[in-house]
Length: 292
Image 1: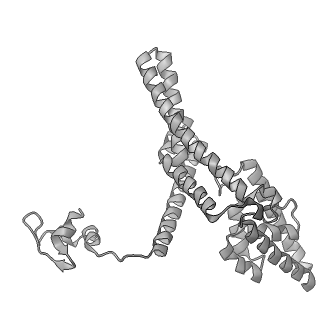
Image 2: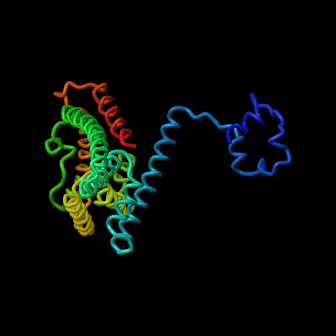
Image 3: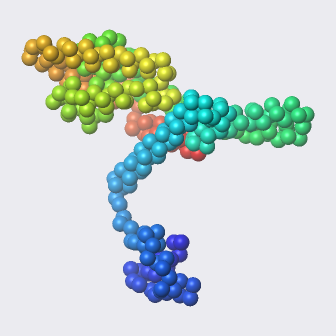
């Protein structure tokens, strides 16, 4: 339909009509056609990045909702596991799509061997070799990125700003918050570190469902429970805490924020550069695109 721009407009001027696109055609007045003819405003690089970020976030939320809907149907017994896997395979992208293709081929191979169809068996085996080669390339990219990240930052359990709290005291809540929240939330922490909106946001980000397969569910359940307990302990503590005690926590919060900020900086002994980090991002981009 974009050919309509050439019929109706050229260099910003009206061009007229033709035999196949008559002036009285009611389609000219539809929103879809009007949208095609409307001149787009060029956005600068920053606006383009923000638009892509917003679009990716919308896609993520939509995709997550679809996956949750399939899991709910499976839990209710409205679909069986095979049907759930089929629907999830349609939703998956990137590495997950490649993984599901290999799983499907494994089933095809088993069926071909069981039927004694040698031609089909050979065909599926060849397809599996192609997919396995594809997966190996993705794993190589991932392995390179992991090595580069380790060179830059080392073991997170040995980096002060990345260390996870192990108890549920008020000090532990303070240590949790800068880890769980993006930096644009930090100014609200200074006003009230028990702000209900801030606490809800931190709980959401620490919930096991938030990071998908990034963290083991058992570990994430433990961290989430520890944070919730720290919120309860700190809420009770704050009812009788003195101004001096509260100020001590504010000072701890300031130091903790500085530690988290510094943790994002490459360690001095890594001798790595911004070019190294760019390489990691380049690998991440390839990994994300390879299976889509």
